[in-house]
Image (cartoon, rainbow, N blue to C red; front, side, top):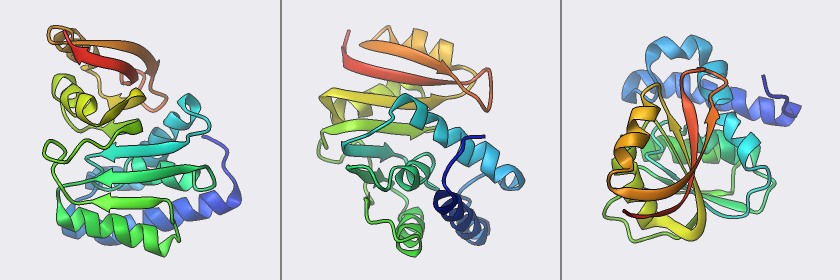
Length: 197
């Protein structure tokens, strides 16, 4: 488990508690994963901290849902000069994200309740997404919203190799992969330089 400060750990506990209250109403995470929330969700999301140590500028988390990985990272990076924007089309999930931000006193978060594909380009320095869509579709969103020098961190499941292969039919991109610590068959894809093939 990643070592974090006592204050950060306390914020993670509060976030988990709020998630447990809201989850029966709007299904933020699979109910079966609640018992392993710290490992399955928080530890999983914290892996991105190893890839981008000191973020600056605009961090855009797309399909934020229950705040994974976005909220976890906004907590971990709350003292860094990075502003987090969560894009989520489900208004109830947006209400949840705003509630957590308010109750945890996080001032580095804004929430946009819109569809990713219709939102005006954001020019993100970093983009993140977890279990959102297949890579060929994700790259459309990345191309639209990532700045030219930006980096996307996409958390993918066990079929990630097939998705990369399929995406290369239509897209060119620079790729670095990191094996997931919470599932050795899953990976984090660090992508930049996205353009149509």
